[in-house]
Length: 283
Ligand code: SF4
Image 1 (cartoon, helix red, strand yellow):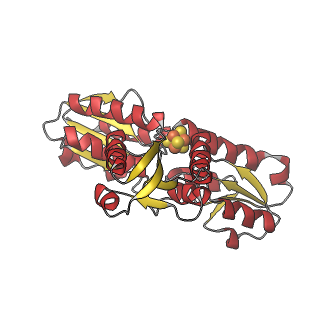
Image 2: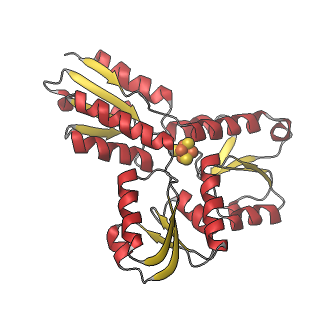
């Protein structure tokens, strides 16, 4: 069975940077002086990476309320400004691992708000990145997930729109087009991350060439789910798995070529285990 890897896959620049930030912080003098180090939420949506980070003495906490002292590391998704303020008020040392591309979305959303635009975010309201962007955009920000959500909006004089970085570009374009009918003036920023676009394009290209397509990434990783979604559109034999143990030999019946891609929060070790499983499988 031939294994074909997508041209771009796995850890994106922002996640690599955030994981490195955690490792460096854990190793720094301040960390070893006895002060605890925490990440606010899991640093990436991958259980193996989180377990590895715990071995460095860094614990994940869900809220600033749960942290009384020490260092708090902000993950690549970013946080709203009130969370940073709460950390400062408690005297915590803040290490900001927010991806620079997400910081750009914060700045664009804030600028739209300050210039009097009704800010609209295209994204999942419960996603940490969207919660962060909405916080920076300020009160009155609207979050839409679908064309139906746009249809339900009232008319505004001016709308400014940004997208969650991991959304599908064509879907965002459709949202932007629909928003045109809801205002006199529309300003749309393309805030979809290149890493996401490149991974999606490479995954689709690979999925087209193979009998079975595997997407490696946790169920909580929205970009991994999205990769599986776009691959399934061109190859119905697409499966998303978090780890090699979830593989099922029945999926590969009659398959000669298997394609592989991985979400932006999937470590190389998880990908290598899947490759080892495929190579070890009797054909
Ligand atoms: S997917 Fe893009 S925006 Fe998100 S963390 Fe990675 S590099 Fe940053």
